[in-house]
Length: 169
Image (tube, rainbow, N blue to C red; front, side, top):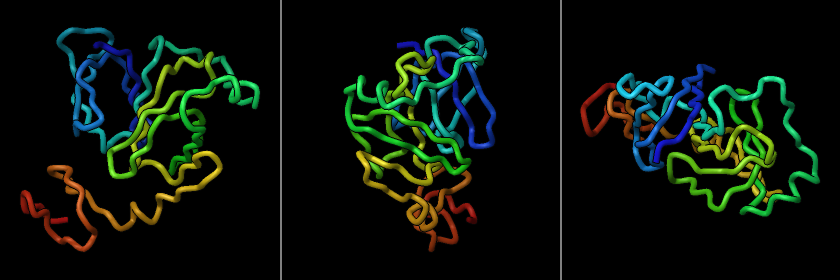
C-alpha cells in the first residue's frame, strides 16, 4: 500500500513524499519525493523523530490543533497517550499497543480534523510517555543503550566496539 508520509528527522528536517515499504520492524525504508516513481531517498528509522501518515502532503499551516477534552473523549480508539519528545514537542492521541522493546509505535491523533491520519513515533526521540495518566520515563533507558553508527544495531552502553561489524563506538 502506498502512503503519503512526512518524515520528521531529529534535527527538524522534513521529508515529504510517498512510501510503500515502511514497516515497524525494518531499520530503513524509501520515500519517493513529490510522487516521483524513481527519485527515492533512503531513510533510516533511527534518524527520525516520527513518521506522519498524512491526508495531503501540503497540510494546513493555518489550522490550529484542537486539544479540547471534548475532542479527546469523542475518539475511543485504544488508550489515551501523550508523547513528550526531547525537543519539547507534545503529541496527544490514542494507541492500541506500545511496546518499549521495539523501534516505536503507531498512534492516532486526538484531533480528528488534523492532516495526520496516524503517526509512527520513534522511541529513541521520546523523553516520556503518559498512558492513561501513568508516566513512563524513557530518558534513563535511552542513556544506557548505544547504537552502532555503521550498522544501527542496538547494544548496551558498556560496549566499546560493535560486536557485529567492529566499528569503534
